[in-house]
Length: 235
Image 1: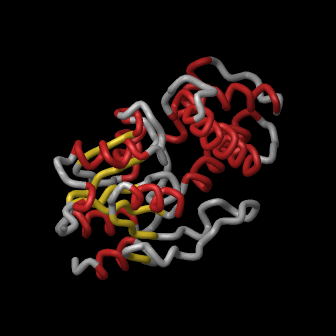
Image 2: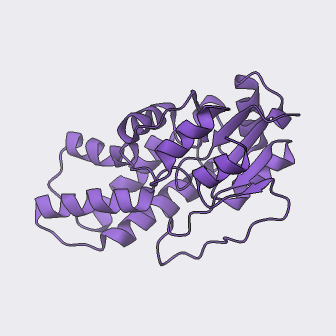
């Protein structure tokens, strides 16, 4: 089957979450007149709060909740753990929405627009719909569609996320290609019939996390960025 749509992982693949959140936390520290290891707090927020949180949902250890709810659950714990005080509810809610204000990688906006000239382009993210819409507005991302795990009541790499994503687009799995910087995401998509394009982001996780950047030989495409992927796809 010809590929008709590209579905994108977002956190790390399209946007630079780590740099963006560290910047927001540093600004918070400056306003409050405090110093903390903001990079370590960002990593903990991401990996323990969000990544481990989605895994707990998948295992049935937590009820399904949105990425926003998982972020807030961890943020409340981080504020207490690091003695960050003086924030009212509105300020904490604004801080939690730092994940709505992530900046794109340098190639993302133009690269996705280029790919969109030939393919349907959509998110397929564990982020919730409101988060993804606000992020797109902030970053200038021109999606044709915003698909979220929230719509399936499951988190990737649950097979239903990929299958339902294709169905929402009115396509067969073989007409859709998952684009991601994370191998587990692509391998799960391929297991249910989607194609896979690996676009590694070597600096995504920062210096303290080792990321497997070796492409799987079964991936359909391996690209250095979205422009390289577009060129390989004849756009």
